[in-house]
Image 1 (tube, one colour):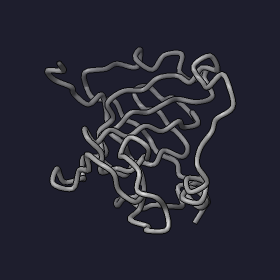
Image 2 (tube, rainbow, N blue to C red; image 1 turned 30 degrees about the vertical axis):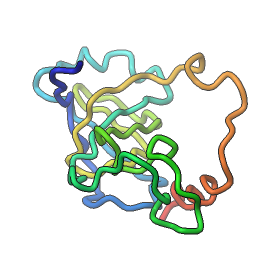
Image 3 (cartoon, rainbow, N blue to C red; image 1 turned 45 degrees about the vertical axis):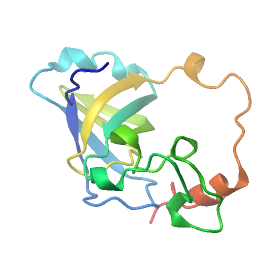
Image 4 (cartoon, rainbow, N blue to C red; image 1 turned 90 degrees about the horizontal axis):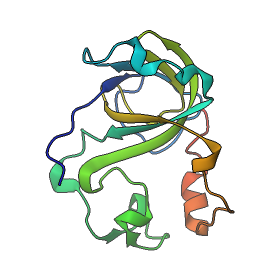
Length: 155
């Protein structure tokens, strides 16, 4: 049982509200809390990518989905379980994105294409290593490709 999790930092970004698409080209800064020194980010600039775990803190608990739903409420796509999609209205409200590392400055990490809004609490970060990526081809249903078609496009 998890007793307590504290944010390690927060996101500084130009986006103030969650949107479904057009996260391409977005640049953000993750600012560590005062509990951490620059040593916490030491060596991260040697990695091309970092996985950022964050909290969808703006999602109201009453809107959390525990069962199945149509992704983005689109009836053209099948109803699938919350764990078969990446929507924000999920149990524990935890998000995860692999971002490109742009720069490290003391207790600030600059990244590209983090799909989190300004003020989002960051729970953890991990360097992306090839050995932790899938070791075989990735398989996914057709609807998910359609859903993601404009996600990483530039607006």
